[in-house]
Image 1 (cartoon, rainbow, N blue to C red):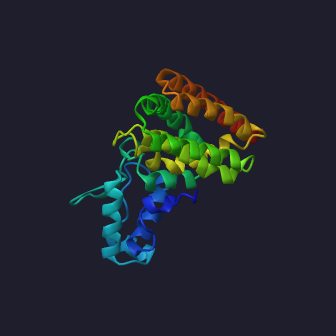
Image 2 (spheres, rainbow, N blue to C red):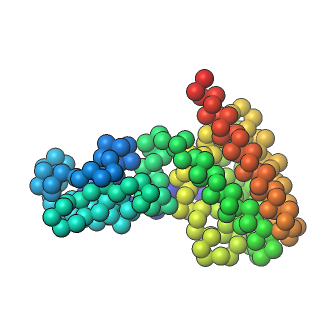
Image 3 (cartoon, helix red, strand yellow):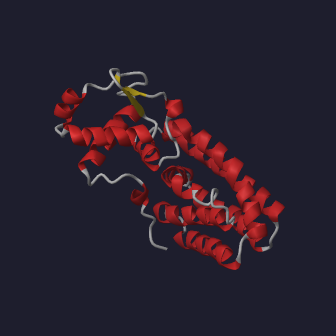
Length: 244
């Protein structure tokens, strides 16, 4: 399978205002611009960043749409609290991942996955058509082919989980994997970094696949619960090992 291009879901940095939005967004994520703080006035900020006011305004509009800032007449542009950020936005996720703060919200990611993916696996088992199930099997075969190569296994692992979400046929569930794929990819890399973790996870993925192929909804649900629980354990063991 060709490598997923995760950049096609983030705002293009080829445009000037895209570069400006990326720089300001990254500052917000890093805490250099704190919630409640007001951005420098338009004139000063455009001079600091060496861009036109037009490019700056377009960047602010973009960040506002992502929930990071709000602009009001006479009071300027303020940084919004973290609770207002659109955490499923591909740009926000990519900034969080690149900041190196992934561990701080990994448990929230796993919690969300444990709510969604077991149910998705059950639906895929009972509703997935032959083509959708074949896609899951293809992804599993790609994982096997990748062996212990952590980087080579990231996209097949993403493919596997996204294919299950897609097999639900639910237009609200299916896009979730694409929305959070930057965070998923980082999670997979960390979870697989422990010696043997990647190969040891294959039987758990195989159990999910087997239940889906058999049309066993409850079996698919339980197998996915086990897979995610073990993945979370692998993640925390890898992180704890790095801290020692």
